[in-house]
Length: 114
Length: 110
Image (cartoon, rainbow over all chains, first blue to last red):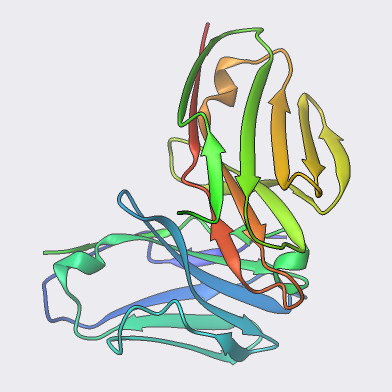
C-alpha cells in the first residue's frame, strides 16, 4: 500500500495566484480529511469528506478555500486567490471510518505565498 | 481555553529514561489519537483508543474516560524518539470533530 499521496510537496506562489493541492487517499478508506498546520495555530481540520461527500467544512477559513472529492481516489484543495497568510503545511489524511479509526497522513504540502 | 491540553510543551530526556506525556480534554469524545511528527514533518498515527490501554513496542498509551485524561509513555527512550507528539480528541457521536493539542516536543539526548 502506497499510503496517502499528496502533491506537490512544496509550492511557492505569488499572492493572488490560484493554488491547487492534491490528495490520493488509501484505497478502501471512506473518510478523507484536509488539515492545515501553522506555528501559530498548530493542526486544524479544514474539511472532512465521507464517501466522497463533504460532511463538515466549518474549518474552511474563507470562501477563497474550496475542496472537492470527485471520486473515492482523489481530492483537491484549492485556494483562489492565495494570500501570504495562507502559507502553511497542508496535510491530507484518510481513514476507514471517520475519526473512529486510525488516521493515515500524507507527507504534506508546504505552501509559501509571497 | 483549548478543549485539549497537553503537558509538558517541551521535554528533554537522557537516552534510556522513561517518558510520560499527558493529555487532558474537556469535551466528550469517542476516540483519542496520539500522533507523532518527526523533524522532517511527516505525521504518523501511533495509537487510537477509546478505553483502557494499548501497547506497541516501547510505546504505551492509556486513557481514563472518567478523568478525561490520557497518557503516552515511552520506555527506554532513544534519540530516534525525538519528535513532536500530538494528542487529538475525536468528538462524540459523529466522529468527525477533531480537537488538537498543541503538541509536546521531545528531545532524547544520547
